[in-house]
Amino acid sequence: MDPARAATENESLLRQIKKVQDKLAEKIALKDSDKDLIKRFFIKSSQGWSYSPKKWENKAHSLGLFVLVSNTVGSANEALRIYRQRDIIEKNFNNLKERCSGRRMRCRERALEGKVFVLFLSLILLMNLKMRFTLAKRTEAKQDASSKYLPNDTPDFLRMMGAVDVTSRKSDEENSFYWDLIPKKLRATMEALKIAVPPRFIT
Image 1 (tube, one colour):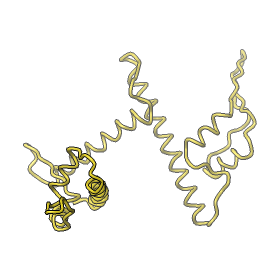
Image 2 (cartoon, rainbow, N blue to C red; image 1 turned 180 degrees about the horizontal axis):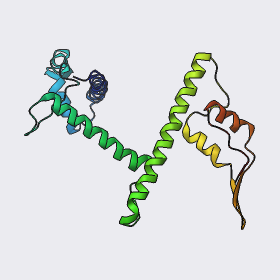
Image 3 (tube, rainbow, N blue to C red; image 1 turned 60 degrees about the vertical axis):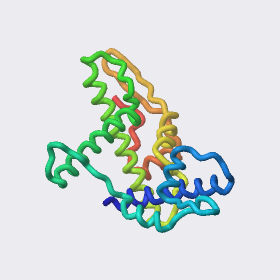
């Protein structure tokens, strides 16, 4: 039994039932999914179909339940452990595809390992940045103040950082880099996120 899942299913079902009730009242054609809900939660009388609280009570106790079936695993705890491990793997692949733009690798097989490493490294940096935002927001809440320098989320911050250029200079002796002047607002944002402001010149 998963309480969070039960609450989500409960809210979703009640929303669907309300839509079916509205369709019945307005005599709108029903979809097959609507007809299934009518069989499960409605009763028919001389006045037509009406919602049945009793039928809801009979079904509500099963909300949040899920069944795992296996031909090899005999222990319920072991089956749940394996299922949760699979869920972690699926989420990692989803992070790779969605957050790291890894749907199409577009590279040769020998370069695949390196590209996957770079993608996951970028994901680690993104998660670190999100953690910094969370901590900064908590600090704001404790101080009961809102910082005008803190963006709403990481995409806004990354867009701000994208406006700052780094120029490379090459010579026979060494390569050097220098940052554009970082605006005051962006410097304040970096300080709120506890990100060290880089030196102007890097050699």
